[in-house]
Length: 438
Image (cartoon, rainbow, N blue to C red):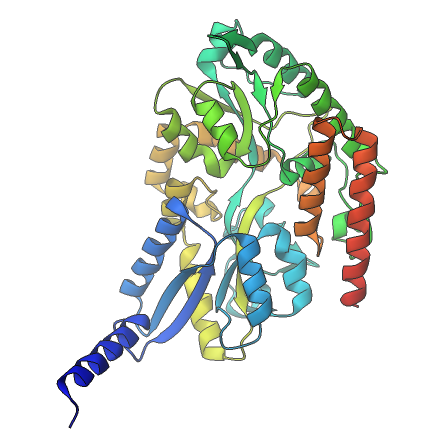
């Protein structure tokens, strides 16, 4: 006979075990790894909870894995084992690596088998994750960069508050008019984050490729092209000029200082992800009117497009057909119109399902926050030519780009030297990666 304490401990263990697999121990357990903190993580928990409450026989457990880099490092050590997740949220720049790893089930195979209507996915978002006519993962948290500006500051500086800068000439003019001293403190017209994603965007905005072989889409990229096509030097030269003239602030790499600077009126213009819209509006809290505009063209008169950022959902290959089918059902639920409406309103990421825009509540949401229409219009105005590059070493590439931008802005390197250093480092990484994946 068990002692009372031992029996109690056994009962507790059983209860914890049952809780971990859902209310019904017979449910098939699906593990969903994600990298969404804050409101995004809370939204995912709610979406998963709603799925579990409305679907029998399957229980989904959402597990936060830290940053995208942290999550991919964990996946690399567990891929192909029972400890791997069934669904993996991965950032956009991990696409080439995931395809090459062979650890995921191409979503296209399930779409074709079921006749699922792929046309409901925003074409320019699906285009990023489509390689050799195969949609490899399901777009989920997608965003593009837009310009945020303080309409009240524009009006006070004699600028038209309804006309955000369309190109860098207009951006420079606005920044000059907006920059001033206030109570002994510098108020900047524009603050630009050191971010590899923005560097990539300005290759697309110039109609140029980041890497060869059609940005790694016609064939595996073997080297970058932002050095030989002049795109990198063009961006860094203009950026450096405006920082040196004191009309553009350099606040480092992270996005928080820029959003805080904007919300507190210390920078009148910033670039940021569309996914930041809700957070920025909440931080400003009505202190001034927030305007939004397209990412300005670098070359006046040439309107290149923007590529998406964010992440997508991958179905991991674990040799278990039942789990794969259940995970596929979960993914379809997460991208359904109603769930995408909830996701958008909670996070600011695009609804990837175009049918979401047919919902009356979505139209009401856009009426209440018209700034988001800028992002939608910019996405729809972009062609697939701007969908961005695929590299197996994109994580390292971004770090290299950001390190060298810092050196340009602090005067350690010229734009030409920095771009050459970027190219040399990234090309070496690409070569090593390609050899390892032959």
